[in-house]
Length: 129
Image (cartoon, rainbow, N blue to C red; front, side):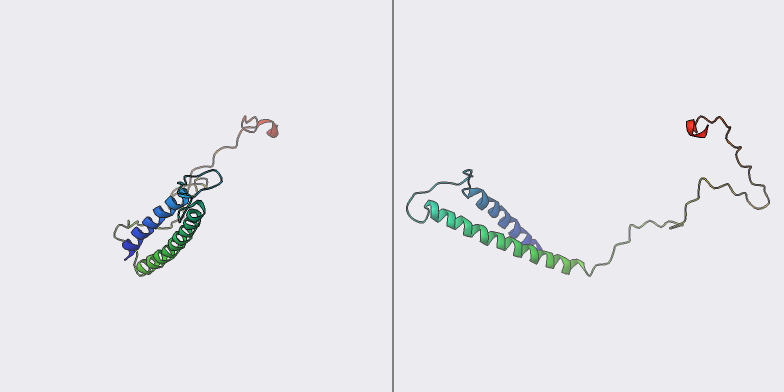
């Protein structure tokens, strides 16, 4: 049913594009002329195109709502497929702080802290002098 309604909506969308392009606009559009008398006079064609546009646009909106309702109804009962899930040994572990002093294992002494920067450090610039 879902595929059938999707195909119908595609056909309605294509017809809607064609009808809109065939309408005569202020700039001329792609409208095709007809005989001045009868149903396909300029006024009759304009009324027909306006009605066709209204009907096709309404049908397109209704089909969109129906397809959305069907899509929600068919996908709401499914479970998430975890067959491709990777098993990692540690999840959500806090990352080690690279700026923290290194901790030595038990029984060993931690390495000494780096020496202080010299007074004429070029990275400090004029602000440090």
